[in-house]
Length: 139
Ligand SMILES: Cc1cc2nc3c(=O)[nH]c(=O)nc-3n(C[C@H](O)[C@H](O)[C@H](O)COP(=O)(O)OP(=O)(O)OC[C@H]3O[C@@H](n4cnc5c(N)ncnc54)[C@H](O)[C@@H]3O)c2cc1C
Image 1 (cartoon, protein in one colour):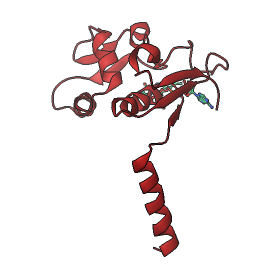
Image 2: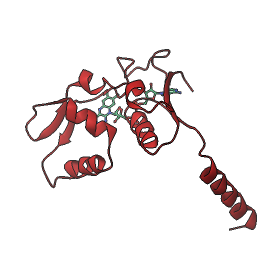
Image 3: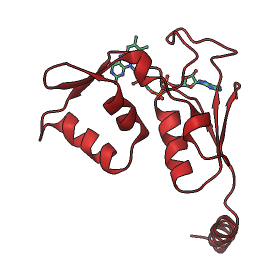
Image 4: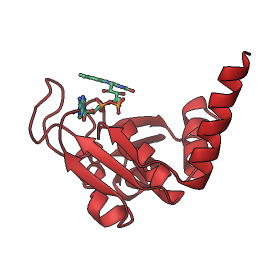
């Protein structure tokens, strides 16, 4: 690796260690709220931007964060299946989406299925620390 590259990495690491840069997560679908949540849990200031209140998408029907555009089934929750293992890893990582799923689950045999509107009834204002925020904008 050329010296200049090493130096620039070292400089940026030093900078980020002394003063974490504010984080902006673009998109409040499924991945965005989880990313914002995980940043906020670690004490980082994060802004979550979602465009739907001002610009619609062909897939989404609401302005809500964490809207499920597809099936309400998060697949099998039977122990030792691959979908269960993935969800267990998310649970152990303190996943926001898994918490939303737990509080909105509906009977579905061995699957974890959710009530869509309860699942998406998540407010960053209530859930994220005050240093963080949510905004309705397109980036
Ligand atoms: C009809 C349909 C069926 C599907 N079925 C399944 C399924 O069965 N299983 C499955 O796993 N997946 C399915 N999917 C895919 C599903 O959409 C994704 O799994 C999931 O929504 C991906 O999450 P995401 O956070 O990456 O994207 P999204 O949930 O789409 O979130 C992206 C967000 O970013 C916002 N955004 C985009 N551009 C900007 C911008 N410039 N500025 C601000 N905000 C912006 C959008 O408004 C949106 O809210 C389906 C999709 C569709 C359309």
